[in-house]
Image 1: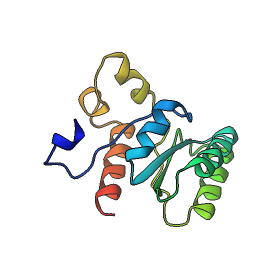
Image 2: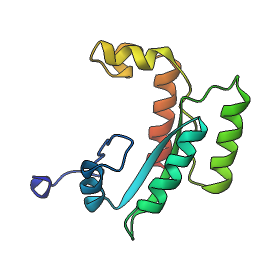
Image 3: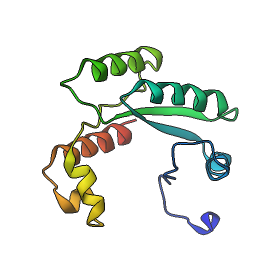
Length: 133
């Protein structure tokens, strides 16, 4: 059905954090990948597995740090590690914000639920960074 779609700039396929058959099929059509990464060390290991599993020719365009808590040393260290390893590809972090978990309970986007929340601001910033290249 995607071949019948003519007017688009981007198609985002939001896949679960695993190398399932669904994800492998999505990668068949992908030209680039954005990887959301939680601010914990197990997620760093997961990123390594994804990088090693990517088919040849697929570029990691952006690393999106998620659940960033500026109050913790752990978040700061992991963000620094990502910035060092993926130079120039790490976006501004998506900070921990309870509004982000609440909005899905009400079947709303963060922009519908609380457009002035920290989560909405972070995702607006991410969109700007993606659009600017």
